[in-house]
Image (tube, rainbow over all chains, first blue to last red; front, side, top):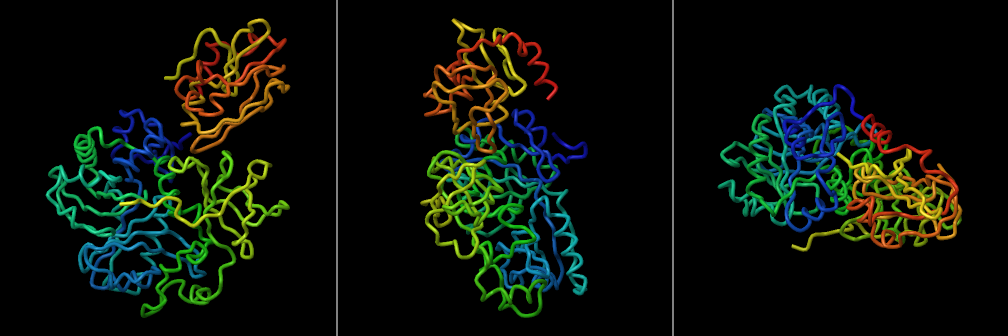
Length: 368
Length: 127
């Protein structure tokens, strides 16, 4: 199953003790689920879940020109980001194809933390280094190995975390970050996540990961359960959030994915991908990312064709799963231009055409 | 560790099958297979009266992460299907050798020709 050189997070032994089913993901041995993934999903929707995301990359860009370097390297406008705030953005190639989607946190006027997907962290580090070469007063430093990332997500996340910190959690806005102590341990506390729920992401030293995990587990008691990558995937899919490798690839532009708002063409100066993206900005994309809900019970999955009533392929499923919240199969799919408004689509599920309804994303939106 | 009841026979594809009773065997999927799939959310089964063939797919089980075929361990005619698990497949995970049974087949095959508990235990240990 796993390659011999698969990496372990600082929490690997904890997962093993919890009896997690382990899977290899992006070169790391990660918990897929601890017990029932549906129960883990429901815990995050209704109470709280605890995730090990230590495989994610933390790449620091620092110095007086850090903001300018990021403005050049990424499609977002990071030099105007307030200290203590975060922004969802992307790094693209010169053709506008997405190399990764990122969250960038501005920790101090001259300190940014770029959080990359594990599978792309090396690419992001290399591209940031190369793209910032012209900015003498900016330095790129990959600190992924030094950090563990622990997420507490769900409507009770704040109540659980409040038992362990004096930090002003209630005042911490969505997409904001502040330094604080969690269980007496230095942490960066961010109100970000990938579940569609309120919640926090805790960046802590790799050597402190077990202590923080155990403290959150104890504070959470019955209200919190550990949750694996399987639940994380169904949670983000219900929330309509893209996954790199599925909805986003180097052959996808931000416009294809319906994320044109992340392309800041109005920022000053050139940036990698500007010319290609500017040319695409006013052209309808050749395909559109849509949400699909199955009328039956069979599940459209990654790579399955979307077809018209006569069976002609007109799109492809990028992600699909049985939705625990909706109780129906859901999927995201790219539909070719000209078919985006079709109302009689089906998905070819292993040779049988199963009817689906096109719906607006997200599938799930939290009420409070 | 998954349980492997001594009294049943098993296939390489992780189905279990009982000794025949009046020429009828009961079929399900093993605890090992159910654990590997994760929470099963949907199972499709052959219809009553359908002919099934040993080693051929006759249904499918969908979980959060994947879908897998259900194979018939024997050749014969389906005489009963577990409509309760078609409605709610949770029992396949919680009680794979009991309430989670899938279908019954009238067959001339001898399940003893399949893997016994010891051989199946070895198979899943090596997996």
